[in-house]
Image (cartoon, rainbow, N blue to C red; front, top):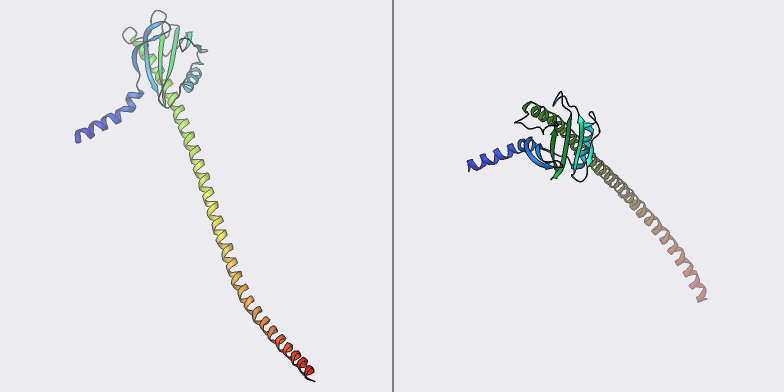
Length: 222
C-alpha cells in the first residue's frame, strides 16, 4: 500500500516537470522531416500562443503564415542568442492540447536544421531562446488566471454586497413591522376607549328613546 502511495506521489509531482520540459525530436514540416524542439505551453490556447510568438519575434522581423503547412515562419534573421554569424529561418507550429498548447519549433541554419548532435552550441542557444519564450507564455497564462480570479472575486463581492443589502432590507422590514405592531396595539387601546365612549352614548341615547316612548304611550292612553 505504501509503495502505491509513493508511486502516485512520484507521478503527481513529476507531471508539471514533464509537461513543461523541452524535448528534441524530428517532425514533418513544409520542408520535410526535420530536427525540431517540442514543448507544451501551459494554460495557453493556440490563438494566444500565435499572438505571443508573433509579438515575441517582432524584434527580429515579421512572422508570416503558411496556411497549407499550418506553420508560422520568419526567414533570414539574426538571433545572437542562438548563433552570432548565421542567418536563421525559424518555423513554428501550434496545436491544441486540452487546456494547453503544443509548440514545435524548427530552426534552419541554412545548411542544416539545428540539432544537439551536429550543433551543440547553437542547440543550447536555441533551447535557451525557447525557454525565454516559454517564460513569457507562462507569465501571460498566470496573468490571465489572475484576471479570471480577480473577476470571480469581484463577482463574489458583488453577490456578498447583494446579500448584505438584502439583510438590511429584511431588518428594515422587521423594524417597520414592529412599528406597525406597536401602532396597532396603541390603536387597539384607542379603539377600546372609543367603543366604551360610544357605548355610553348609546346607553344615553337609549334612555332618551325610552323616555320619548313613554311619553308616546301616555298620550295614547288618553
